[in-house]
Amino acid sequence: MEDTLNLKVEGMTCDGCSSRLKKLFEKHPEVQQAEIDHVNGTAMIAGKITEEMAAEIIDKAGFTYKGKDVP
Image 1 (cartoon, rainbow, N blue to C red):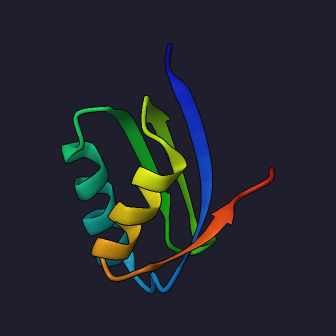
Image 2: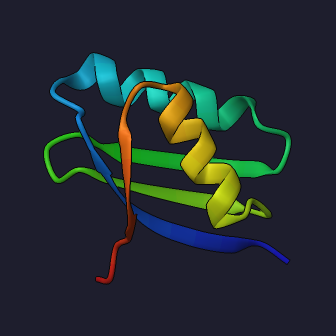
């Protein structure tokens, strides 16, 4: 079963930031799809990845995980 995480990310300032984070998520074997929006500071991650795993990837990319995004 595929789940979707909607997350808040702080520190992204350009398309390069969102592209870098997207590539890192897509390298993870449990991620099916990643959509990153640097303007709104959001990340939509589809797959069998936990919130903790996602937070670690965000941190490794040099950004700050700010919790779940409630649409």
